[in-house]
View 1 (cartoon, each protein chain N blue to C red):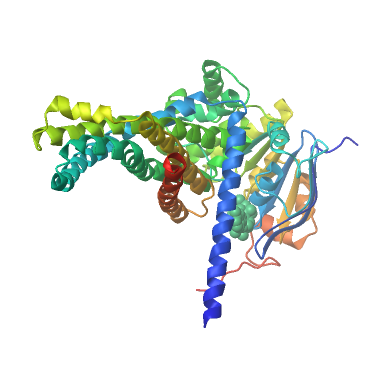
View 2 (view 1 turned 60 degrees about the vertical axis):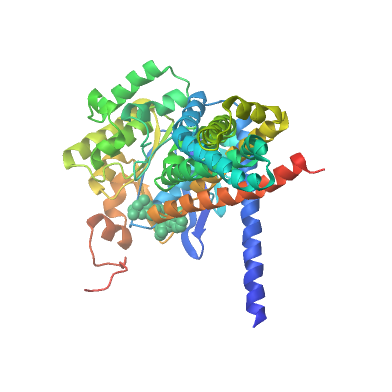
Length: 259
Length: 257
Ligand SMILES: Nc1ncnc2c1ncn2[C@@H]1O[C@H](COP(=O)(O)OP(=O)(O)OP(=O)(O)O)[C@@H](O)[C@H]1O
Ligand SMILES: [Mg+2]
């Protein structure tokens, strides 16, 4: 009875390891191709706009409500210890270190990662990627590299914006609902904030940006079949990016703050 | 004898247990126009993709200008690719780019031509396939199937490549436009000195554009010869195919209703 179970587990482990190998090889190849000329500046710029600018509304909403709810929740907790003055600091540290990068990346994974997988997947199944090759254009340089570069560069900027909007959300709730003095709230926010809080969040953002675009490109590039294959690629891109974000988030946090 | 432009020896390709190509030997001389005919699903498109390096054959050798290409590195392959133009069976137009940008893609991206100049080239090529300059501003999704095919053709010849592959260039076109395209292909070969390999089901087109014809059947080239000999091939399979008879040695996998 347990033999089939073990076989299945073994097969799944092997398939999992094979996928990790394939993704790593894909990423290695993409990075190697990305550093050699020609560079497609227009593609990079276009992708930065697509990833950054058009994500601003989504990121803004996520950040402002996260900041607001953080202030509200920490108030209910901290009031029990008469430690309300710590609220601004709790809000800003949670945002910059954790919630800013993670939530923004999850939103971008849903928005951009999915769109990327769908676009590249459609190009794959309609032979547009083959057509690129016959026009002596390397698809890794033309399609994959600009997306990876744009993702890695743009995500930190987005998270910086998200940090600021999040703090603003906390500020609004703090001042208008919890009766903080506005100057005191801002002073408390800035006084205990360390460079490393923000910096570590931005490094995380860069890593997550790379992972999101890598998953979008990988699943799109390797998609098979027709509409169904592209649909599957889209789902896989979002799910795998989300899992990678959570996994890498832990290890990056450990690398930054563990002693 | 001059070395062949394209030379295939024992090219074999399977998908899983499905054997598609089973030892293809083929030589195409410089400035020759070769036509490949054969039933649907026999592997004609796969054969072209193997030569282009878009698919890797399981076995066999493929030489372009005497240079073995099956084991080339990425960079060397790109250099060989510059010799090729390809019309894909499904068009494969870039749907995020305008029609003229599609046609100008090769000249701009791989030859480094200035966009303004490439645009003029693109409009000239579109004219050659019977499409006006106003079509250039549209997106591929706004065109009819036959128009897409002609844009794809214009894109394939825009860089004036040494070797051009046409995968069913006249399928989906009306008979008059089909003949215009035939003339265009003949012109590419005679004027530019290009080497052409075309796939077609249209025997009128095959006779017009081909110097030689080869027939693919069950993974092998069962007959090849000059186009003038096609009517006296002495091969029952070829006879049946060119006359389009349901009765004969080629059995279609169909069941009666
Ligand atoms: N990427 C692929 N994966 C699996 N099987 C494939 C793939 N490409 C082609 N095949 C199979 O190879 C065989 C030959 O396909 P191919 O497209 O070369 O046919 P064809 O001769 O061009 O037919 P048609 O005249 O209809 O275009 C088909 O049976 C097809 O199912
Ligand atoms: Mg075909």
